[in-house]
Image (tube, rainbow, N blue to C red; front, side, top):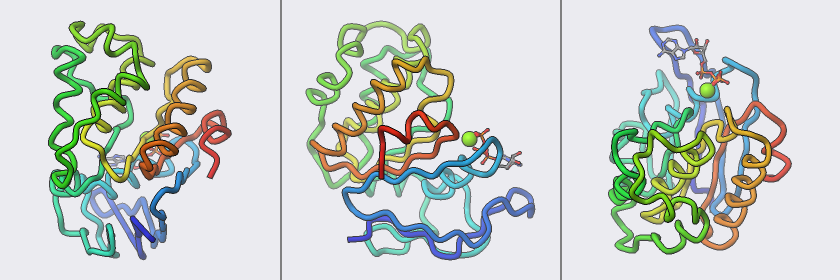
Length: 203
Ligand SMILES: Nc1ncnc2c1ncn2[C@@H]1O[C@H](COP(=O)(O)OP(=O)(O)OP(=O)(O)O)[C@@H](O)[C@H]1O
Ligand SMILES: [Mg+2]
């Protein structure tokens, strides 16, 4: 079944088109990667999918329903978790408080996956009371994934998860994403400019 579909989507900032007539379909259970160099519009694509940027034209459907006019928080409540480029954890909050912020994603699920999240990322449990701003880049990436994952989303959007992270941690995060897809059935759409991660998140 098609979970997410973009049809003829054009998105612009101040009328300068960045995405032109984009068609993209992600089936339930798939991992799909979109590769592209610096500045080609990867983050713009992610922002358009989650609803932070309204397309000029075209439609976005999620579970067969037109969500083009819905706000980002409405889309999150429908089960889409978004992990922005650069992570955007709340630096002054503790690790645990950051994870808890994710509970509002996916209003249909009353199940919180704290156990799975801490199984995948044990370092977050060890550092539960530490302020998130003091974590390493790799740990902050894990925290951003954990925050998006805790409420059991159906679709995870990952914007350049490898950015600024040392290769061994990139490998580990790639394997974790594969396991999350296998074990929890979470569909994943990611964008990357490095080849490193695509080797692991093979479509
Ligand atoms: N808020 C904005 N206002 C105006 N232009 C923007 C805005 N955000 C991005 N752009 C422009 O849109 C284009 C695509 O940017 P985008 O951030 O989507 O690229 P990207 O593929 O994610 O790049 P990177 O790999 O560096 O993250 C760039 O030319 C950028 O300057
Ligand atoms: Mg980007």
